[in-house]
Length: 70
Image: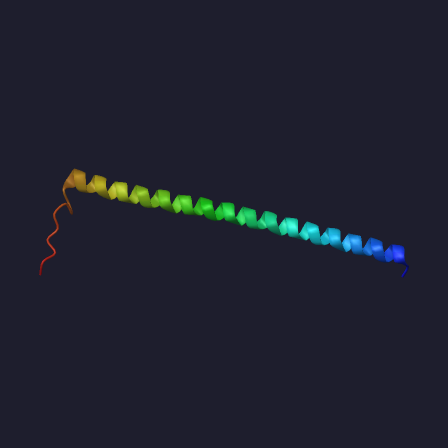
């Protein structure tokens, strides 16, 4: 193997390594965005459940006064 071939192969390996790092970064960014979106959905669902429960108590009075003494 001559010196030029070795230099070209080294540059090619370096470039492929950089491409792999960029692809991995893109995948991690995508995963992070999906996780943030899932977190927002869970939070919105929790808020809706709490609001629905409060509306039910206000409309029916059920659970408004709960006797938990034994």
